Image 1 (tube, rainbow, N blue to C red):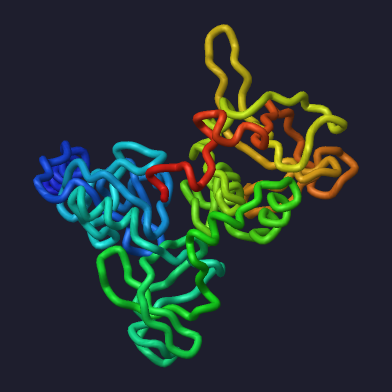
Image 2: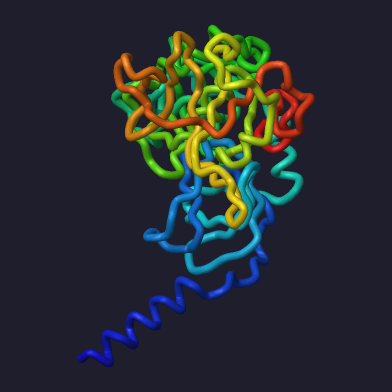
Length: 318
């Protein structure tokens, strides 16, 4: 019995760790669900590295059973399941990017088979998801198409014309803080980068993207962008990013483990267990008793720093 168990475990491990098979299908895909998880290995027990939202373009590189090896705009060599994707050739990918779109402008809603709340639901639809615009409108509803081409209907007040959305983004300190506050109480999840759950850098990235700026995905990357600012309450400004971790030593490099946004008034807002506001002084509520590794200012470096791009200028996202 023990031998059978050992053999079964070995076969399972070899299946999980087997190299990706050659993929002779379409070389591109677009996320076709509200968000998809991107994992280190083709297995549900593997670590989730990040998420991509509906409408995001992925490059497809390999296959293992029903898993596909992909490159995302900010992550390479990660796995997601095939039913999350709409596969396309080069021309299809280019047509998707060029197509007029709606963006979901509310935190959470659904798409329906026909323009009625009693119609069958097609899928959930969350903040910043993208769908192709249709031409029909019916009493508060608009026709939309998933990346796969499936026709759906969205409530008109749940969506915004994507080009208008891009034009109206303003990355001001006030907007960053107001946007961050909208997500207070959202639960933490490693790899979370959607409105349903955030990790620390997924939160800062999402907040900035809502204000029209695309940051790099991880804290260890974000710390190398923008302009260094002293850790000084008289010099830091709302929207600056504070990074935490282990300083470098003679034997070990620096480890960046957490990122938070400066809220002002000697406070930070960050995703740590949940999205919350913490004090940077011992006499304040929820004192965050850690010394930052660095503080970086993002505003002022948009489209000047290669790691800080405006939404309109980012080729793979939009």
